[in-house]
View (cartoon, rainbow, N blue to C red):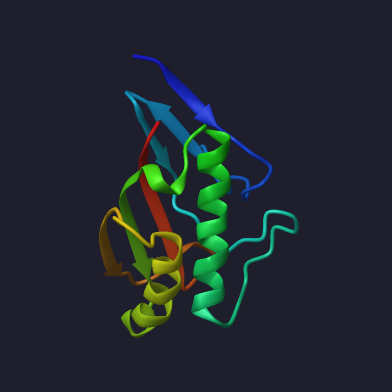
Length: 126
């Protein structure tokens, strides 16, 4: 089975020993994305809605680099540091998936990398 690494300068570079994404078996598996500005490498702070918007833009850039799109996402997992941020995240997330959204799980976690407040990972069709 062929396995292809997905990489683009239009999304944050990996901050550890992992790839931005992998394409295999007709699917694209993206690593969890934080609200990091790919141009500066800085993590957005403050508004969870703005963080979610940045994350979705990063995901879109990676999917584009892989020859796919948000319309091909089949599963998303959202990690929140505080479930009280659910509504703010959800309203912006809905802007990126306005029709026939993918399956999704949302969980509260004890801590995220770089002390982020939200992280999102997706699986999409290649």
